[in-house]
Amino acid sequence: MKAVIFDLDGTLLDTLADIADSMNAVLAKYSLPLHNINDYKLFVGDGADYLVIRSVAGVELVESTIPQLATEYKTEYLIRQANKTRPYEGIPELVSALAERDIKMAVLSNKSHIATLEVMAHYFPDIYFSALIGQRAGYPIKPDPSGILEILEILGLPREEVLYVGDSGTDMQTASAAGIRAVGALWGYRDKEELVENGAVILAEHPLDILKYII
Image 1 (tube, rainbow, N blue to C red):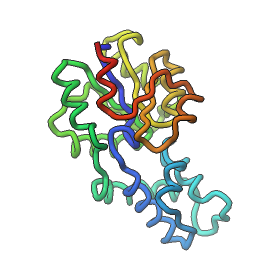
Image 2 (image 1 turned 60 degrees about the vertical axis):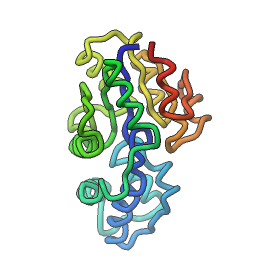
Image 3 (image 1 turned 180 degrees about the vertical axis):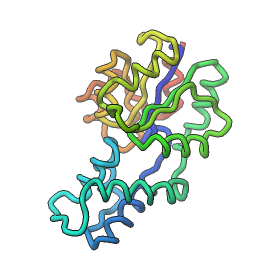
Image 4 (image 1 turned 90 degrees about the vertical axis):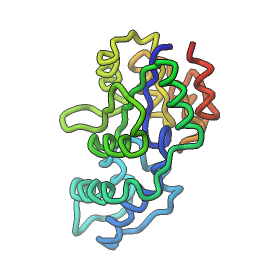
């Protein structure tokens, strides 16, 4: 393998507390029901719009709309995005080891593009990533494979030389649709069953396990 594409939330970074705090701040503003952090494990992964939709499921919106809440969430998140977020144990060592081996790295996330760029610059300032792609207006998000195909073009590598590492069924579907090997990150937000059911061909208990598949 010559490259690894990573998901971001739940794979490289544990961002859940900052996401939960940001969404709950918006919900509180409109006196809508709040959620605990474990609820957000099932809400995240498909972009801000779906985060909001899941957060207000079964609630009648009177003073707000889904797009309005999504916009306000993004604003709140940019304020909080580095408050409680941390790389998972083993991730700094993994990306450093990959860089030392001249393995190319990239990130494909359904997080907003600006937030993706900012948190990556904050938490991995000394690691070079060939491409960082988040949710951009006018571009499809995962599980559409377009983002992976764009990254493959940037990397200049065939599908067979690239792994995609993610923690959700959406990530596994994205990799499968793009024709690259899907690695399920068991340290993330979703369980083994979801990963396998959606196309994981490799399951990694710990980030450094991925080094076994880099030849």
